[in-house]
Length: 109
Image 1: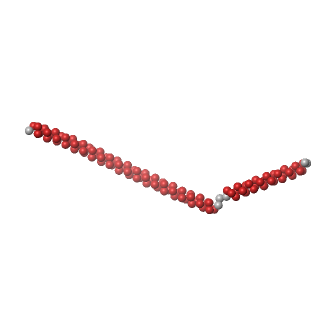
Image 2: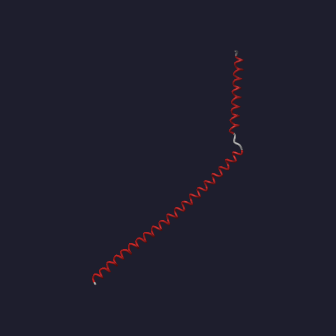
Image 3: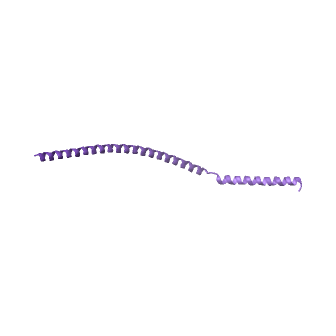
C-alpha cells in the first residue's frame, strides 16, 4: 500500500466514523425530543404544584392561628380553674372554722 492509498483509506474510515457519529446524534435527538403535549402537561403539573404549595401554606397559617387561639383559651381556662380551686379551698377552710366554732359553742353550753 502506497502513501496515496493509505491517505484515502484513512479518509474513508474517518468519513464513516463521522457518519456513524452523526447518525447516533440524530437517533438520540429523535428519541429524547420533548413533544408539545409533554411540555403542556409539564406546565399543568407545575401550576398544580404551585397551587398545592399555596394551599399548604394557607393551611399552615390557619393551623398556627388556631393553635395560638387554643393555647390562649387553655391559659384562660387554667387561670379560671386556679381561681375556682382557691375559692373552694377558702370555702373549705371557712367551713372547717365554722364547724369548729359550732362544736366549741355546743361544748361550752
